[in-house]
Length: 201
Image (cartoon, rainbow, N blue to C red; front, side):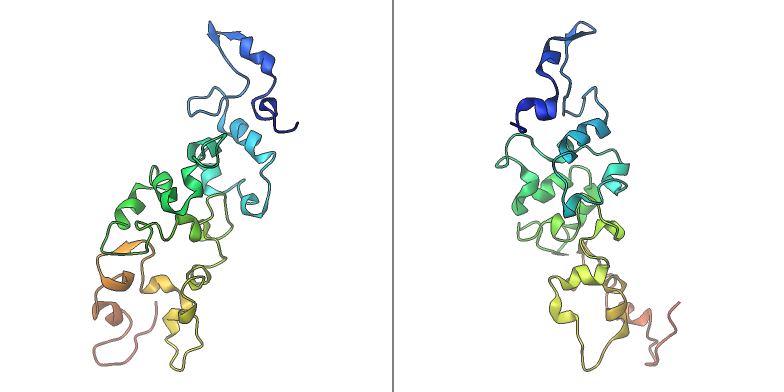
């Protein structure tokens, strides 16, 4: 009984209320809805409350006034592209155009091939971590897949433990292994050609 039409759309009697000579409904989830984004989202968040959505309020999508229905299809789980790994990125790319371009570069995570989704690294529903990462830090997020890089290593390279992004870019690169810069320039930003390590700034 709690999942009938009126649970989300409000009283059915409002279907017949005239407003500016138009038929209106109490609750429309379309982008041109007369309801605010907050009101539309409240209908979803009143039921969908769990660990993955705890940080929605104050998250970057909430601050940017993104409605649940901007990404999700209502009434059908099968047609909701954002729930499938192979099609999720296409939904994200409708806003994140820079990331779409980066994933077209020769070296990138296998998002284009449908083997990985944006949600493997980012929590679209909000996260206290930078860039809405699924883990508290970038390195912990990377280690979810790249556990072999976690160490301990016999010869530990300090920047590896410090921040993966010192050497690698997250989405795509024209250089192999998602490197930020070509070798030897990448190494020389910390190590001089004489072989001694420069101080980190």
